[in-house]
Length: 450
Ligand code: UDX
Image (cartoon, rainbow, N blue to C red; front, side, top):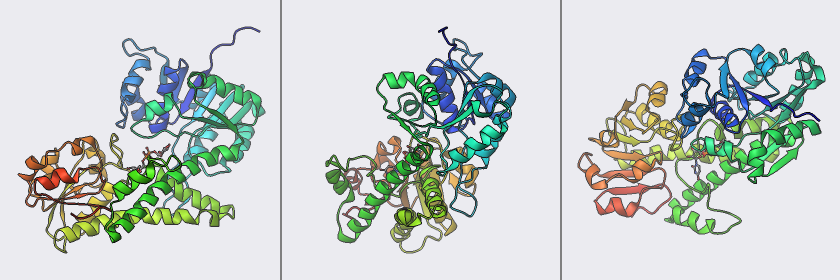
């Protein structure tokens, strides 16, 4: 048989997932065309810049975006579905699936529009691969839609390939995935995806082939498990607080059991971000539609334990300043939902800062990367250019996102600028002994008070 030309790949939607996936596909050696409906985003990406802070992603883009000095030239961008349809053999759908307004369910409108817009331009054999996190049953529905709309008919096939990348590690997670899961309906779809992921598979990433519903469920169940693990340890933190135990020691001790494992047992003000909160809610909503809501009632508890953490942090702060927040000055360290990201979507840190502000405190926030995004969502908070400036004059200092920079702060120097040496650790990553040594009143969630 004649040598086949290498696969040509398109990536639809260039947000977190799509921008990273497109750059990674170019890194793996494919010719890639990325599409976004926003010309501004495309212009930015063409300059080798990203709309978000993600370590290593700008460099990866510049290594491949056409027109950059010394780039491979394998990565280009467009706003035209027609161009994408003509160019690609494999089309990855990477648009977002946010929570619907006023409902738990997931908003599928971006995925639906992407499939519709792409399908009409599929005139030859092509594999459309969904990566977005969707309610189980979506792939089945979209496969029918695709075959109906595509001029190529059944030759336009669908597969589902969930994505597990973490913000802050997006490049590494995409280039070296800990597993590749594909929901497929034909051997040829499986073969194509093996070709796409040949490099990570050769490095040893496991390749798991399933049907559509299982592939969709792998993603939502993985995120539900992670959320449950975090809420479990936060529930233990509540009990520790009541019993004067130490949840950090407890997590360390139970984590030594391999079956439990150390990861995702960091207690604090809980999980946030663009994925875990909305994914567990969409999962509950979908289970309800399928008549299986009882199976997921525990996720309701996982969600409420998580939301309780934010309220608890606000209460501890009120207590710390003597019972009323009115007119008190609060320094807040951290605004993003986790370190090494500038993402403030459903961020516990920003949520706590906002609640304190709305209850009459004067809140000054500092975050190493999340300031612009935080300001856009919460313009009425004050923002300071450094941890020291956020702490200046504060009656209490709150540690709400565990950036390394905050662990390296010098409590003695910081003590010079605050009004009162009082700190609340909402992430359990500051060293209590270090702060207490400098005469700080130190309190953390789920840890002994002295
Ligand atoms: C998550 C999943 O990890 C990833 O596999 C999926 O593809 C997308 O959703 P991400 O949203 O980037 O990734 O964040 P993650 O690292 O999972 O953290 C989520 C939240 O949980 C953060 O707010 C983090 O601070 C919090 N968290 C995490 C804890 O409170 N304790 C922990 O032990 C771990």
